[in-house]
Image (cartoon, helix red, strand yellow):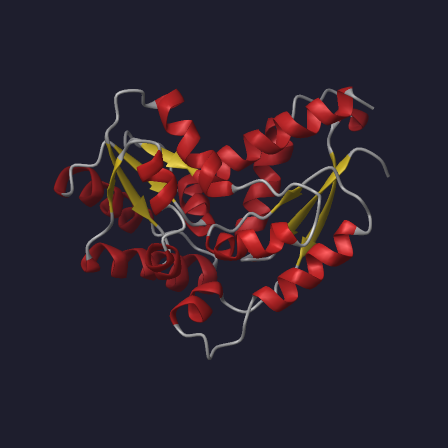
Length: 237
């Protein structure tokens, strides 16, 4: 297969399924042959990223992630996609292993803010404790000239409940809880924009119905960048 990209997924599987669904749904295809070529590695047994980031005695996700990058690099994809925000903690190490570019999910999400919300200054982030703790988004947001707003402990606890108790454990979305978290970020913490910095939150966004909150969904942005790059590469075939 030529002109394809590799998706390192399974973190978690429902979130990866959401990425694939959006990818196929948004691809401008009118026949089977106009859809994109890609390989999905749904590596569901990769250890929890947040567990390791908060406690390095836990199993290290980098080990299987390196194996995936090494294996897929032998097939020579045009680029890699990793639809897991927290896994970007390992981005630099993974990119150093291969000459094939890896799309940087947080960078792309932050770049999208000026396109959708040009007057925004205060950027809120909701994500796993691992992403909040390790600062995956901090540099990107600050370097872009924005003021970063992190969730309070209360909001963080609610976010972890939504991610782990509902989406990961039950494959359910508590829409009321999701909208409540967004309301707290917008009205209590005065955020102009709220970045969804976890793919389980992207699942919530997809399933929870319409709302008027100013959201940048990192996974949705990654889908659009994947499509743009894949189509660009295909034209050069």
